Image (cartoon, rainbow, N blue to C red; front, top):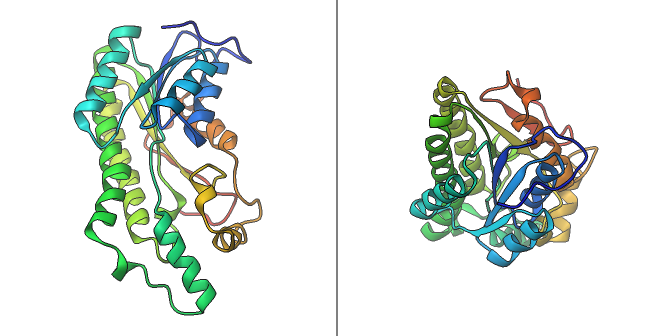
Length: 267
């Protein structure tokens, strides 16, 4: 493993991190932030070229992984531990939305007709979102906890969504998958803390990522209007995530941190 990038601080000095979905968006911003704080970073993504590009930037290692493939996730985590000797931080940002559903939302907005998404979703549409967002999170959590248990420590951060609380019209599959991520992560957090492993979740609102760039302009404008701050940057989410992974959050276990620009609060 290459040496950590010289950076702005040593919060994660000497630690090893794995960032899934690290080839772009929030994951790439997290990889950069962790490296800047002294962490040796493994960047994993379904797009191998993107993973290698970000890894090169942070002087880490790039990996190709499809998080829906549990065997591939297990092999990835085992390989990181074998190469680096430990695994201290796992940040799971890999996930997808549904570009077609966004087009249907635009169609309804332009026509003035009610939103018609649910009855147009196929089993394959549903399974794709659930497999990547929810099953993928399960695969990563299981592999990470298995790797961290022998060392008696670790921090894992998953990415949910504010849409799990303030569910979006026309997005039932996405909202369900992210609500599942929250419940899964919180349940695992209660189990894993007995082994010194902290699990927490960040729940973003709209974030200006390549995935968000596929949102039709009219739909994006409507989403921006729901909050004062507008779309967050990936770097803002990276700050939230790195806090949850840091010693500064040592007493934070099973939290779901809203990062949605004040669109709503929950109690």
